[in-house]
Length: 464
Image 1 (cartoon, rainbow, N blue to C red):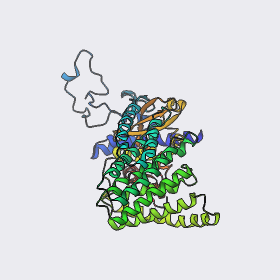
Image 2 (cartoon, one colour):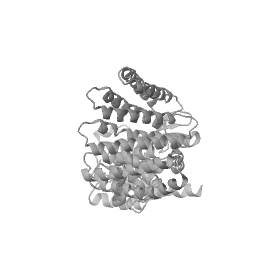
Image 3 (cartoon, rainbow, N blue to C red):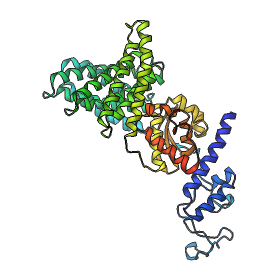
Image 4 (tube, rainbow, N blue to C red):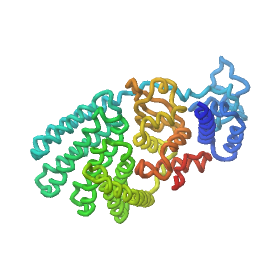
């Protein structure tokens, strides 16, 4: 509890300074007002953070007569204009909205279930076109889609299955196309069979929920490579590497059932797809990254194979450490070749937050964000931090699914949210854990550091 109280004060101060800075005008007036805000207590600064969208230009010392419309009363020369911050006396301003307020959210499950219905129809159509040996795989995929309609399934897990199924249906169409080379048809058939078998584990209730979520996220990431595998213009060597990455990665996920002891490496390998599939990644960097990722997944497969001897498994584990380090270096190289995002703080924080929500366990999120969530969320318990949407430059609207399966949302200040999330993902694992959205996390961290002196964990240090 002491930890929570200390961090709560820290977040109040940081969020207050950020909000005051974002609402102050530039120039000497803004500097003077910022200095004044620095002298206030955290509570007083918080009271200044939400000026009315169109403040009435009346004096703060002499209230306007009740029988005189304010629109007919000219503003005195010493009254602040609409661009200046509200008065510094908290009692004379309207208090900001309670940041712990939450409201019921629209039902995202209905939208997801509509997508599942459409995908199921597409699968029925494809089933009559695909080779007979793929009929069991199509049936498995259909069963998986129906299974995740269960209200107990988290929004993140259901979305992972939906996106994976979309990728698989596109692949089934390529397999059914007579113009597809026979060898590629056979390779794609193996991939579809492997991926659908892995997805079955994703709705196996005997598998711990956190392991299922980890597995479904990795499947979604790896199946994103199927379009490039199917594309005729993809270089043959790259296609072979991608086929190996998808097949071996999903084999590992199926056999390990997404278990934590082998999970980090296969998750890190799955984020390589962000850079390999990005057209902005230089060809040489793409080839090296795909090669290192393929080696990591092959070693993971060897370790997951029950026929592997203890000696060979130990040897593979040692080699995997070296290969994983190389793969992460290539991910950094690919990231450095990208145009860095230039979104405002709010948008960068939105992209970053959604990536962390998707990649970090719900237990870890719940523990780290305990001092930020609304009281009712804390009492009910959060099943799924679903997503965040930019509301203002310093405020995100966070949507969540509670343990009672209620969908709700609440405002979260950007500064304390980002600094808390930075505690969950070390800087030296940021790219490997989040993939391309990590660039937005770094952008948000730079903004907070340079503009407001707020540090977001180790996101700006490679050492982590």
